[in-house]
Image (cartoon, rainbow, N blue to C red; front, side, top):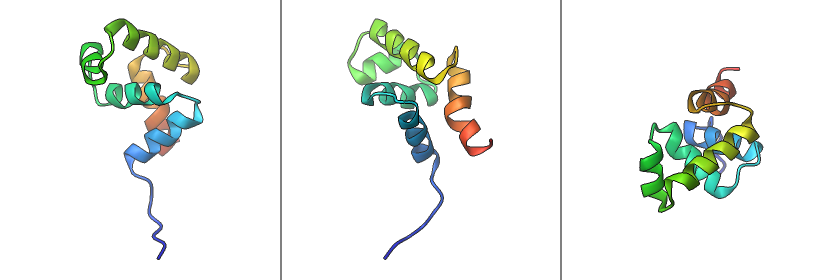
Length: 83
C-alpha cells in the first residue's frame, strides 16, 4: 500500500536543510534553533561548546544566505510552505 500525504513541518525543514547542503550536525543545530532554543540550550542538548554552536550557526547562515535566526526560519520553513 502506498500512502500519499503532504509533508509535515519537520519533513519540510529537513528537506530544505538538505537542499542547502547542511551537514547532519548543522541540521541538528537548525532543528533546535527553529524551536527557539538558545545557544546555551543547543550546546547542552548536543554536548558541544557554545563556541561550536556559534560556528555552526555562522556556517548555516552562510550556506542559506541569511544573517540571523529569524531569517533562517523564514528561509527554510515559511518561504518553502508559502512561497
